[in-house]
Image (cartoon, rainbow, N blue to C red):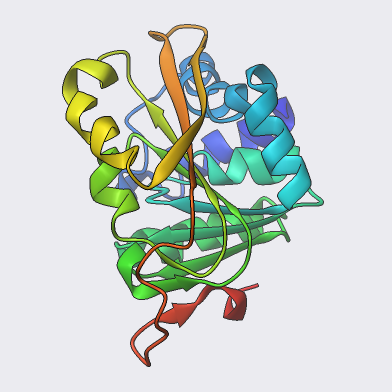
Length: 213
């Protein structure tokens, strides 16, 4: 993982420095706040780990500079990873970086989540992206899926009402503090839909997730 991380860091700070995928310019800080931060939920949450291992398909929404999708793809080469991002430039650049890092288990889609039809069982991850209920209410699926949000320490103060609304249609399957060196503790909270959400009609405007696999 360290060799992978050094190559990743070098790409971000040299060839792709002008894209602003990270503001970190010291390798150890990059390791702590980007690489370790991305894989620590898998190491510290048995629930998350079991879901990821059992499902084998991981969807990362709003991956930005490639976190956590690329470190997780390196850690779990047998799993299939799909990144969904609204900014086309980042989709293109992170795709190029994934290729240069020799990650063959990653695909990318330039889209908003409400324009995607999740027609396969999967685990979704969002790192510091989107409010809980606002995001969950946009999901279109005909499967039971699990969605994990990776939040900062002030999550419960900021999104108490969001969690309350989400509980109407989603069960909380995990709530755990994650320790990451050099950072504040983070909150990993996972939701599983109690039944198939209302947005189940496939239209020509929706991209089937299975078409990306």
